[in-house]
Length: 156
Image 1 (cartoon, rainbow, N blue to C red):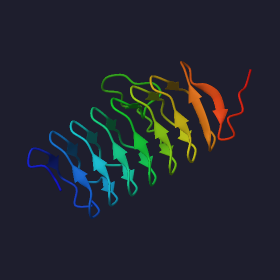
Image 2: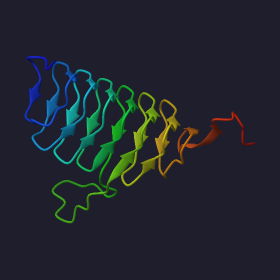
Image 3: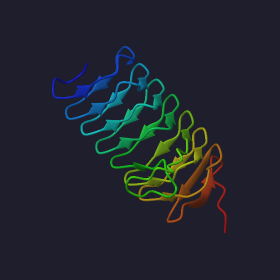
């Protein structure tokens, strides 16, 4: 289902994916099946999104960002793809970001360019992720730091 008020230029969208109103999906984007892309989401060209991914409202997925299967992106999550942004930067260097399968990123989190978020990792709401997060860990805060793993072990 593609809402009639969405601007979807890509032909690479899997079966059963829903795209809601006021989304913009550029021509080169690849999106898997069974995804739910909520309203007011922008997806650029050099983006790969796996199957069964949920992207909540107000998210921009910039060139160089890849989301594997079963990823959850909360409302207003901010991705970046340039570590030194400035207007009309002719020296722009695209930094790739990978969110591995089963990972969840909470509302209003910021993920800096060049980061990998591991499988089944969880990023707390409002966190600022400045370095890669290992598989199966929960990170929170600004800057985001390890809170606990799947065994609920806490770090003092």
